[in-house]
Image (cartoon, rainbow, N blue to C red):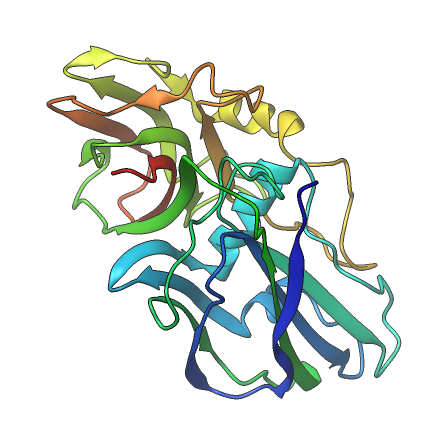
Length: 301
C-alpha cells in the first residue's frame, strides 16, 4: 500500500527580511506547504499584505530551476490546480486576531500522485529558497512555517515545472511575441496584468491572446481577455471576499490559458520536438506583464 511522509522543515520562524535556502528531503516529493501568519494590527490584515511577506519561491535541482514564482503567481497557480482559493483564516477585523494563509508548491498536477511528482534526489541536490520581507506595520508577530510531503514508494515518470517570466513593457501597444520554451508539455499559462479595470474603465494590460506552434495556431487562436475572465468559473470558487471590507481579491488581475481542462492530459500542448512555439499578446497598455508557465516534464529528460 502506498505511503507518505509529512515533515516540518521550518517552524515558527519570525518574520524577517532575508533570503532563506534549505535542503529539501531526498525521497520523491508531492508538494511543499508554506504557511504565512500574523496578527491583525488594529484592523484587518489583507491577503495582499500577507502575500507581501513572501516575495518569491524557488526550487532548484543542482542549479536547474524547477519552481520560480512570485507569491501572487503561486496563489494563482493554486487556484488553477485545486479549483479553489488558498485557505485564509479569520475573516474578521478584530485587533490581534491571527490570520494564516497557506500556499502549496506543487510538483504534480495532483497531490499524492506517485506517477507525477519530483523524483528522489541525494541530500543537498534539491533546494528551496524563499525570498522574504519583514511584515510591515499592518501585521504584527509575523511567522513562517514550511512542511513537505514525500512519497517513499513513488516512481514518477513526470513532474510539474512552474516558472514565471517578467515580460518587460514592449514600448508600444499592439502585438508582442514571447518565445515559449520547448521540450515539455505545457499544462497552463497564467497572465498577471499590471492594468486591470476597477472603476469607470474597460482597459486591460492585455486585450487578446494567441498561441502558435510551428507557425500554426494551437488552442488559443484569438482569445479575448473577457472570455478568459469568464473561464475563471472553472478555476476558482465563488468566495466573495477574504475579509469584511476586502473589495477586489486575488487573483483579480490574473487569467489562465488552460491546456488541461479535465486534468487528464488530453489537451496538453506538446512542445517536444517542435521548432518554435510563440505566445502573442495584443497589449492594451504599454506595460510589463507577468507570465507563469506550468509544464509537465519527463523525468527521463
